[in-house]
Image (cartoon, rainbow, N blue to C red; front, side, top):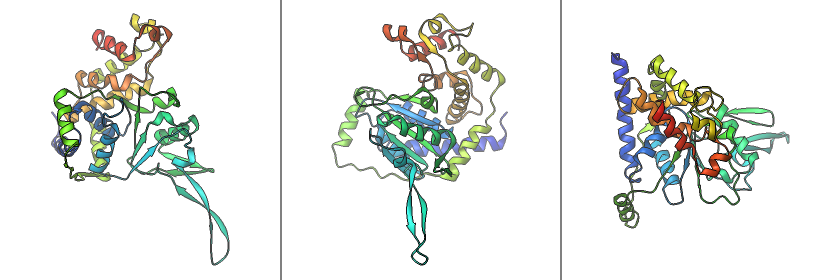
Length: 329
């Protein structure tokens, strides 16, 4: 039985989540699962990569969330000529007018904010991607031998267009692994699209209210971390991740045939954390296997690296995850 303090904590989290949903609904129509997955990653202090064709409100969703939470926000439009210093910051020479002495001063770049929208992240060259990599993993920036901590909480919500690949730099697996979730946005339903057209072609303007600040957000993250999870759930989760690796003797035939590299230990960590957050968002005090199933696709789809045989036959990582869930979890 959950303690009274735990019940109160989950109720507090649900209250904030309901307010966030209500504010987002003023701007974003439908996409409930996408919104929920973004919120799960934020409550787990994880980064998300949002993939979808143009016009599906990827950027608008992140902008809306940034307006609702009382956190600092910066948008970085990634382009092929973007340099690392353009996002991390750079040193400038300052002269003391009284003494005439000159000193270097570090001017912080747009990366120094709580919420970062990395728009079209795959357009940045590898040098700039690697600068972002350190920030995402270590929550700090190093410049000219000095290290500068990033504000907390710190989230990178990146967007990527799956169609237009000319002039892009595919994200390396090491960087993809830093993202907790890869979230695919699909086309809206007909009724939703009708509502979108009505709203966006009228004089309607949403009045968004801030519902949560940095301190409250960090406290909610701590609630997720404190949530108990059974040893059985952890063992099943680790076993599932192990079966994504073709060298594992328990791996199914589809993995051995089509997978070059399976998911690493970070996948097990994020599956467990994500399941806890999903349970909390549903008002429950401990995750179950259904919660693990819910977060499997966004956690694993970018961590299962398929081989040439899969590419030739059109087998995607999502199909492999479906088979794993069907036969094991």
